[in-house]
Image (cartoon, rainbow, N blue to C red; front, side, top):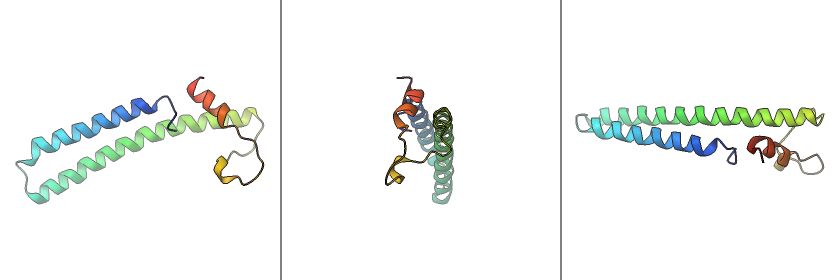
Length: 103
């Protein structure tokens, strides 16, 4: 997934969400008790984590679609990660990467 072309954009969106959360914390922290600050930090961290998950799921869906398309084109009934295979098999990694990156 790290080589997916959407990854830089996803990283920028996550960075922006994190910066926004930090701004919100800075703006509100002075008027909050320690407990309220902790609650706000937890809420902001959760929001950033949910954003990260949504971004990664979108990319994973695209990667899985490329894997499925490549596997079906090759007539494969199952595709597993190459680091799980001890011996044999057909490595379609390069073909999937070509579909993902267009290169």
